[in-house]
Amino acid sequence: MSQALTLARPYARAAFAVAREAGALPAWSDALGFAARAAAEPQAAVLLDNPKLTRADVVALLAPDGAQDAFRNLLGLLFDNRRLPLLPEIAGLFDELRFEAERVVRAKVTSAATLGDGELETIKAALRKRFGREVEVETAIDESLIGGALIDAGDVVIDGSIRGKLTRLQSALSN
Image (cartoon, rainbow, N blue to C red; front, side, top):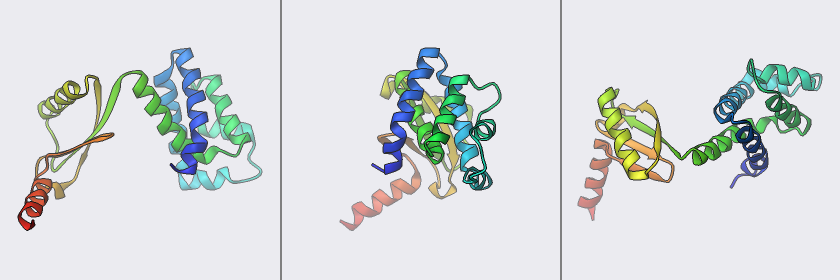
């Protein structure tokens, strides 16, 4: 486990506890995602390293409009402890905790071409049946798959791509 994840975990857990108590998991997830993307921007990263930057400046820069005071306090705490670079890891860990609590599986479906709504719904239904949970799907295109799809749902990877089948066939023939 990386040191960044080790350092980020207590912040993510604390943020999750506060957000869950407030009934605001989606809002916090969005706010953390916004702050993480903003902090990861090269121009913002340089700015965040500026010693003249105050706590209020950082909160104003990284907090989305309408963010709760508790979220703004988290940003201030991260600034005080020089942990702002951990925002991407904190956001990722927070989302893992959120999806586990909401019993949602996140899956990335990579296909050779754009999937139609019917195809995507069929994949979602199959994943719901397999995991017994709701499924949130992100899609991507990779033409090198030739056809079919590659599904990555955390610990489970299902390679139904033609490229994958050809690779397995080639391996079987060479043994």
